[in-house]
Length: 245
Ligand code: ADP
Ligand code: ADP
Image (tube, rainbow, N blue to C red; front, side, top):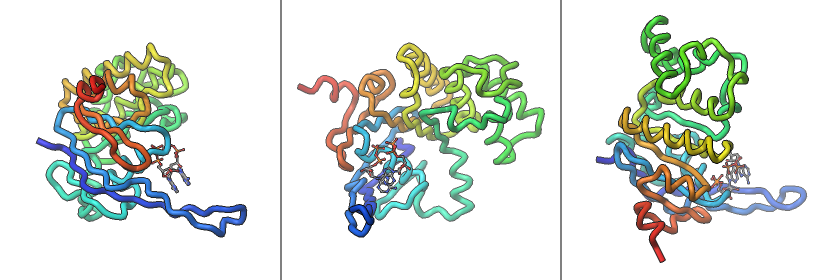
């Protein structure tokens, strides 16, 4: 049972070169990349900076246009969806970013940040939304009264908990985690990874987990896809990748 399947994705960028930008160079950021993500599991996409990880994630989410390839999300041809169908499908796909502070509006109260998706998609009245936010705060290990505070009043790890609450309040089917612990201290990383795992089991979530950090993969992933220069150079279960000679 696959939540996400991508086949033969290609993406090239044209880059200007030289002091005057008159030269041109083609960069193949994705070279025939395919992947499969089973529902309720975690697929880690690993690779050095520049290997194509974020192009892959953004191409799958239609945040950038791919040159070719197919993406099937929850049984539908995701690249073929029209605007309104895409908007509906986007409720089922949420993202968690590396630096929660960069993506959290500093002038918004935490409660409003977390409720934003509910408001955008018109889900529930104000009092249902408040209840929902309270439950979500508890789920991620924060307090009901934290809803009144502002992001800068929290530590990095707590801010990532806010980012997780905001992403999960819509009960998405797929969560794209883009280096969600890379900006955190190692001890805090372990707490956040544990939280993500607990929530995955509790809510039946599927994670596409982008990271350059192999230690993180071991803690969170079921399957691993290793990228290098736009190509998949290895893929398999975590056990197989780590136990390889
Ligand atoms: P990351 O490694 O986390 O993807 P980058 O610094 O590579 O971060 O990319 C940040 C942003 O800059 C992305 O939107 C990416 O598409 C864009 N970008 C990356 N490399 C280039 C480049 N050579 N020319 C133009 N834009 C780029
Ligand atoms: P990663 O996320 O693994 O760091 P990226 O997907 O950001 O890799 O980048 C893959 C390759 O594509 C890199 O060589 C990067 O410089 C290039 N690239 C990314 N975005 C752009 C862009 N907007 N314009 C030109 N080149 C880009």
